[in-house]
Length: 263
Ligand SMILES: [Zn+2]
Image (cartoon, rainbow, N blue to C red; front, side):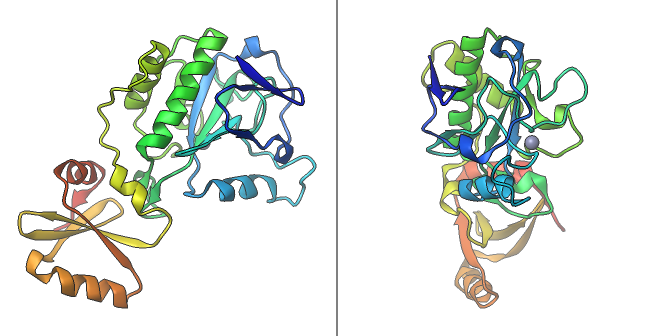
């Protein structure tokens, strides 16, 4: 099933449409779509994504040459460019192009270090929304979900996009939805806790045994013991940062996957 919004064709999973913001790269037959390209927005705020795409050249009428067919976050699936038109999303010049793919942008739940793509994280809810949408598109358009049909942006263009998103895990979730399992059984440890820290400037600490570590970008450092936690927090507050401490073993394991210890 699809939603037709003024001639723009979207999955019926969309929660809203912002077609008015975007120009398109030309119309196409839905049957020409053979790939789904997965993106990360490099922003934690869905509204910033809309404005950065549409206002950059102050041309609301046609939009600028950056868009996607869908944007998802924790609670929304937003149609931006109908599937029956190609969006400016991947820049691919090989087998996978704007013309034969659908681009889905995923809003980040947290960005640890602007210069380090591995700290651009995604919440479980956002990943599941994207995977559910991808599965619905695959079913409807006759695309068999696999690593050759669902590809990260970086596979078709020189970019770090979609940052830390684990594609093997993502494709597994798509296949679960595609096969009718509503409970996506994922191996990812992308953490719920990370959602809570949202767009604020936080310093991330974690505790192992009696040791407290500071995580910044792709490194973590032992900065004191648990008895010193209050003074560490006070020091951070004076420097203008909120602090968040992880104590859950699963989340710490995830941080350690993203970072290495600085000695
Ligand atoms: Zn991208």
